[in-house]
Image (cartoon, rainbow, N blue to C red):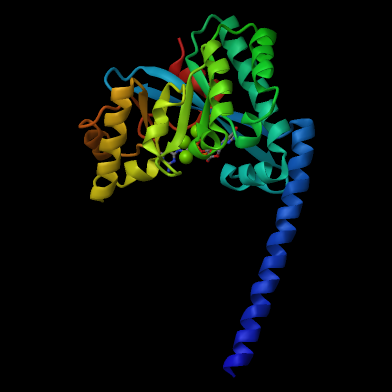
Length: 277
Ligand code: C2E
Ligand code: MG
Ligand code: MG
Ligand code: MG
């Protein structure tokens, strides 16, 4: 009996797996079409707010995908798929064009947009022509230096450190801000922070969430912000949702707040209406 049940469970499990594979395949096909046509892609912008003055000091560009059949697909679903399939290259290229076009339009309207940060995945960062591509982007859209910056995760930079430093330095020469994203969730050898020419550290939201809850989170926030200050890096607290979290952060060296409390990601039009003058 137990054996029979075990077998049934296994069959159920396998059927579920096949369904998942099927859906993933369908999604991948849809994403491939989207990468080719750009249809259904949009960018949302989330403000980074100065903790002391409340001023908007930057924004993060976040990719959004709406598909006629699948509806709004979460980045948590399609970004891993895009990375794994290689589609992140054409999608990332489209995102950068959209962001550059948006910045160009805002400038043409006489608005003063803040610096916008774009997420780069490993494949994008390791493209041999990343730097000339970025240079061309600035030139094509007539953007002032530094207006578009980048966010990278720790694991990318740990890889070939020497080569990573080389690319980061070239981007720094173009005055791009460079942030380490989701800091604390990766391998987090604190010592490499001083070896990488980055400008910003973004403390992952799991530690912000844990702030009033676990002593461990507070210890990590204290360590990271202390070190960042010593090294002259800007610190962003990610995923700040409550006044209590904001208050808890006042004990540490945090420059910028990014989270639902200070502003959700919104489409370009809404971002301009709310934040730009
Ligand atoms: P991320 O780079 O760490 O971006 C921050 C994520 O946290 C965003 O999720 C944002 O909407 C969410 N968030 C911001 N404030 C809060 C908050 O207060 N509470 C909570 N619960 N969440 C908050 P999103 O847009 O779903 O993106 C998820 C991830 O997908 C991003 O994490 C990033 O790693 C990736 N991603 C998004 N757009 C792109 C892209 O254009 N290129 C690449 N390579 N990755 C992207
Ligand atoms: Mg990011
Ligand atoms: Mg992040
Ligand atoms: Mg994150």
